[in-house]
Amino acid sequence: MIKTVSLIGAAVLALGAIGATPVMARGTIILEGSDSIGFHAPIGQVPAIQYSDQTWSALGGSSPKPIAVVGLNVLGGFGTSGTHAIVSMVDLSTAGALSQYSAVYFMAGFGCCDSNPAAIAGRNVDVTNYYNAGGTIEIGNYDGDAGWDFLVGGSNNSAWVAGVGGRLTGPSCTDGETVTALGISNGFTQPGPVGCWTHQAYNQTYFGALGFTKSYFDADPAFAASNPGTGAYSSLLSNGNTITGGGNVPEPAAWTMMIMGFGLIGATMRRRVARVTFG
Image (cartoon, rainbow, N blue to C red; front, side, top):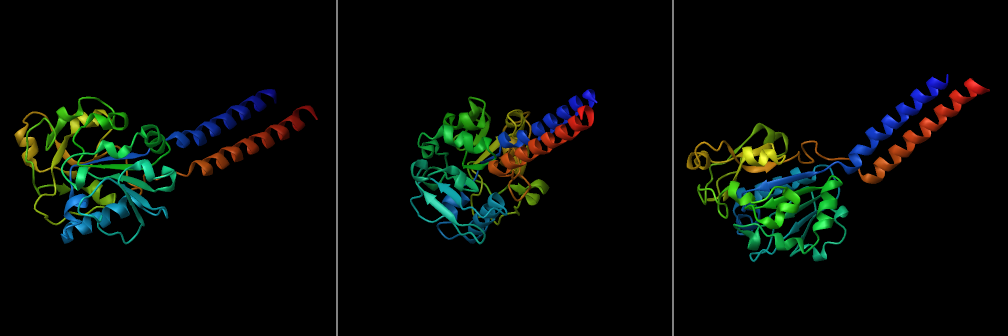
């Protein structure tokens, strides 16, 4: 029976480990090679407005929390959302606790063309903690800027970005992206043409090694054709699912309660076995 007690203790520890892992489970980072949300939606292009609304729904899923949209947009406006409140801000200095948001979307600089790591406002640790706790982050017009390396991983990433700001060749402006089956399951559909949906495309071999293995939009084939022998390219590349695609994780507080519950169950089982063994 002493052996039984030991086995039960080990089982309880195993349950605790299973319960504890998701508390630090990383969330989702999405690299977006488009400025439809920051540029085309604010000037009233309907396909871009539809895409922005679709993006908020995909990122936020069933979460009741608002979405933070971060970055200076000289045209004003961020499209519409039929599902989530949008809290817009120039940078994270006024965002408060990031845990209050279902997702954080970093808009391209001035709404167009290049990434904007200045919008982090020095809160790198807070952004990392938000991601590690399961948060969803999307970086608009990601161009491999080193200011995002702390979050994306790798270094010299612009060497594997094609298009605007990247060091690989390819179109600077195209509507040739194609939504994938994975993209559809994560809440996206094929956007209508806006004259320039894609500015950047990401080499899937290189970024796949960093964990970015999920392409929601395959890039215009012209990017691969411009860089022969380097593999496939994506214009919306992710290292996880959106909340709509099943990427959400329980709140840390909920996991804490579950772990405490496992501990109480284990303690009860130990007491019962002890009474049988020694009573």
